[in-house]
Image 1: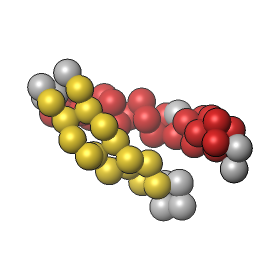
Image 2 (image 1 turned 60 degrees about the horizontal axis):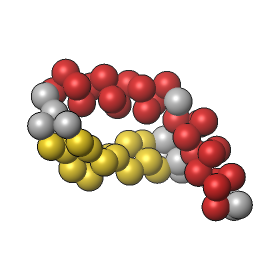
Image 3 (image 1 turned 180 degrees about the horizontal axis):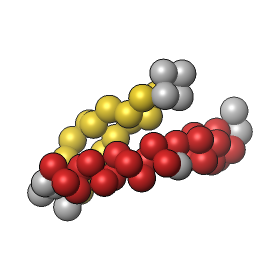
Length: 51
């Protein structure tokens, strides 16, 4: 399975770029995990790029 999601911190939104071999249940679980850790992911992204 493989997928890519874009995160929009201004709108607190996730959009799917692509997915391969993912069933709807797996997609839902991945989105749930991303939303649960949304602030952490964005914070680490900004730290990495020193924004």
